Image (cartoon, rainbow, N blue to C red):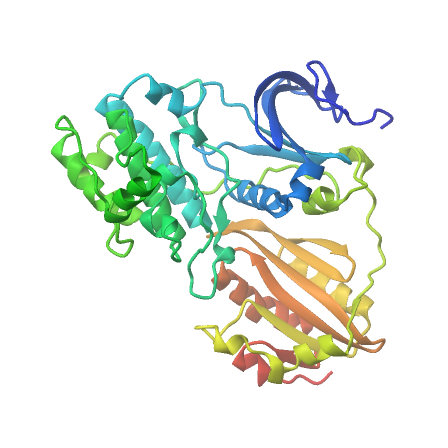
Amino acid sequence: MSTKCAKTEKKGTILMQKYEIGKLLGQGTFAKVYHARNLKTGQSVAVKVIDKEKVMKVGLIDQIKREISVMKLIRHPNVVELYEVMASKTKIYFAMEYVRGGELFNKVARGRLKESAARKYFQQLIASVDFCHSRGVYHRDLKPENILLDENGDLKVSDFGLSALFESKRQDGLLHTTCGTPAYAAPEVINKRGYDGEKADIWSCGVILFVLLAGYLPFHDSNLMEMYKKISKGEFKCPEYFPPEVKKLLSRILDPNPCSRITLAKLMENHWFKRGYKQIDKTPILDQVQDNSPRSIFDIVDDSDAECSSGRKEQSSTMKPTCLNAFDIISLSPGFDLSSLFEKDKSYRSEARFTTQKPASTIVSKLEEVASMGSFKVKKKDGMVKMQGSKEGRKGQLAIDAEIFEITPTFHVVEVSKKSGDTAEYRKFCDQGLKPSLKDIVWTWQGSEQQENQKIKP
């Protein structure tokens, strides 16, 4: 491709020889969103343009990666769809579903909604949030400004920049980052205690339901600290015109105690909620994010030399294992492994190591063989073998990394870890696929108690 990537995103500019840039739809500190047209299909899309240098300067590149990870996991009719991720030397581009109806906030700003309309939006919101949670994703910034409406008047949740994946929880099983918009944030979030992402999202959904029906916030005060106090105590008053069923439901959703707060499962069984509810098939839609290069989109995001999507560097076929120094080797010793002091479930950890006397090329070949048996896609780079599952599991596609460390030219340590997906599915893959297939090259396994006792001679 001779055409260079666009340096600016002016109207009429052709981006990556794929999209014609249209009018500016909105902008923030680090990103602009444009209407664009797919040159091949004529489809309208929204292109989010992120300034790579700006986000790297303030340390937000991991947040961008998280947004990509989350949007790849979620394929639901009530969630804005991510079509493609591209990058140039200075910009990151998200090509996303173009939602024509604007923000739900603009609709509410004109006044409270009828009960039937509010219930429909609330049903769609809960359906999308329930699906996200089933994939291990918590939004953490649900509010009318982050909810869009399409041309049919259906709801679309957007802006997963602050979302958290299940894997980002600490050892106590809770999230600890204070984020979101104060008026919609749960008490446990603003009080900076560890919190359950699912329960925090449910609270935000309750605030949104109140706003849809009342046209104003349940917790509001010109003094921010006073508003925080009201939120912490769950002090709010429903208007007289709220149906009794709604008042009762809101009291269960906006419960300041997350332990007694209603769950999504119970909420979806509520009589008022179920009225006229059209349940969507929860069968996940397969991942359709395009990535025409053998390289990970995260490598493209990180790469300061990235050009247009067709100009990505080819991956080297030579694997270079990571060399370990003395301190690295000591830290790998079971005697220095302190994880058992913190992990509640010691029976099976999300990572394991094995040692082998085989060369790196043999290790890689064996891992590729295992991956092909399980229908995994394989990407190799700098001593790392990344295996991405093609099947959708309970929490999305299973992704496994195997990093090869060189102790000596004839002795290697391989660390296998789950990067995403369901732990039970990962355990099954390890026990039934990985370990039996690697038995010819493994000298010892180290990981769970069961693995540490297992010693397989070559």
